[in-house]
Image 1 (spheres, rainbow, N blue to C red):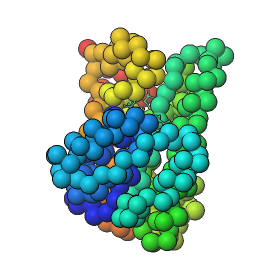
Image 2 (image 1 turned 30 degrees about the vertical axis):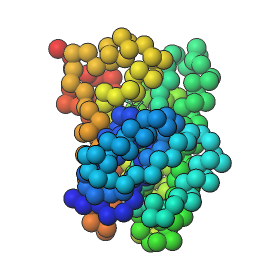
Image 3 (image 1 turned 60 degrees about the vertical axis):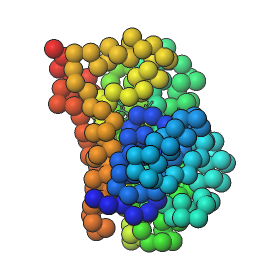
Image 4 (image 1 turned 45 degrees about the horizontal axis):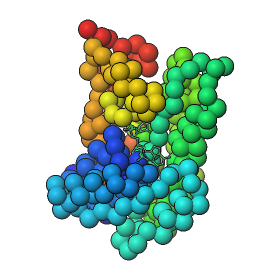
Length: 254
Ligand code: NDP
Ligand code: 8X3
């Protein structure tokens, strides 16, 4: 499976985004790596160069910063500008309080990152794809875009929105040659739960206790597969869960 061209990953400093960067680099792509933690981006870029001889362009940005996203990602230098695959991965959960007791700042952060950030990156990158008559937008959704669970109303709402945006974007790009997909994971052990629970590692670890979660590389493998189908094939959506998980809330633990 070879990828010729540029792959832009949002949220490439950790977890699924970092794993996607590695998978695409191994397949021959050049990478645009974005995220807020610039130091981490440089480490990832160095790792990719050492492991695969990959050329990366690092862009430290917050996807919530509309002006920065639109200005920077629509005018990437040289060959980095011809983005072949956009992986809209940057996202997070904040807390699991009941909605009536929830933290509005956390709601803002989830909506602004998971929904609006994804829209800004898409708006910056897709005009070039349309012009070139080729490209692929791959959104990282979630089982939370298919189900709702207690304490997850806002996070689930953002991932339902990702599903709606994916379907609408596919309609709007019909006839341009640009593909649109969503890869929707269940439980993947990354920094996600540590972030969701405000750095409480004990609580984060308990999410995966007694079961075998997915790892970021499982999702990256799927994203790469989606991106490497022939140009006339569009994988609309994939739900991928651990064998130990039957629904968002039904998990086998031993
Ligand atoms: P991680 O916390 O490990 O990684 C999240 C990434 O998103 C980091 O690179 C982080 O970079 C980036 N990010 C977060 N906020 C922003 C922001 N405002 N601007 C730019 N980048 C940002 O979590 P995962 O890898 O698990 O999550 C990746 C995606 O997968 C998310 O969309 C998540 O909702 C989704 N997902 C995760 C599942 C799981 O169980 N882990 C399951 C289903 C979906 P930085 O902090 O440097 O900015
Ligand atoms: C993250 C997975 O099940 O915690 O999207 O919502 S879940």
